[in-house]
Length: 176
Image (cartoon, rainbow, N blue to C red; front, top):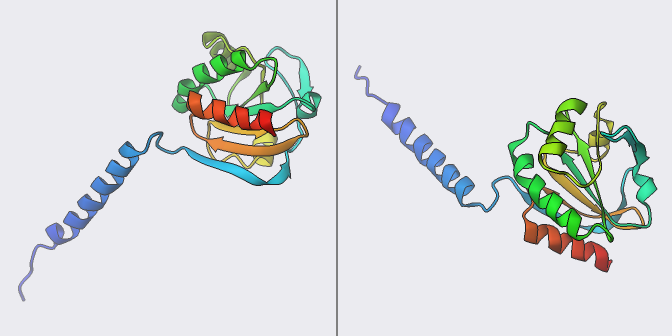
């Protein structure tokens, strides 16, 4: 009985597959980002939590004003990439839109240091129980929700959002 070396026969397709996947990931503009504009009216789940400064708020406190709800963490590299954009645009739209951060799987101390490092100009609080993340079905961070003044989720964005895209979403939010 003659044995042949089948390793090259198996390895070649696996290597080709890995190369194709690698090219796809590198060629995509922001890797794992996806957009989903909501066509239906879904009410944003309300929640209450303590901000990093100790003040207690709920999402419904901002009813009447559009909200950009951003889920993030200090240990998340895409969140570090996105935060300067959020800070810049929240400053630009501070009179028209409320930005609110929800910190996942983190400590108040590290979140406060992160907020200080990035000069975050909008409130953030810890989702210490995971209930807020569960209510919004967060599968990855950063994730942003665009909620109109009536409390309806108008759109969401998964991944680090670029400045132009964030502005487009906010303009859509203000036009609704």
